[in-house]
Image (cartoon, rainbow, N blue to C red; front, side, top):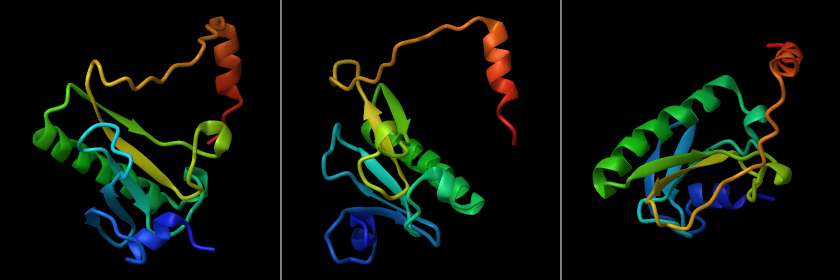
Length: 133
């Protein structure tokens, strides 16, 4: 079954498209947190960033940067949050690779927080050693 983003891209559902190329497309989030809130999604229905190929992952961030600059010019927000989530435990709500370009204002009510653990440097170094690229 196609994801909602696949249906938006194919024109089966209406959307306010901002951009499209061979790898990604962007459109206004129907849930506009603040004016100028844009979703950038892969055209191929990868579920997560880890599933995507390098070209798509790079294109996603490159387009997000271009859109963030355009949103900054058009809406003059105090800041911009770029958010990309993977799987339900990582806050992903649509199982299709995408990110949000979210214009921010000091009093917009958007929150994002987590409890800091502050492990000692030795533990941080041990954790870093487990990551093999």
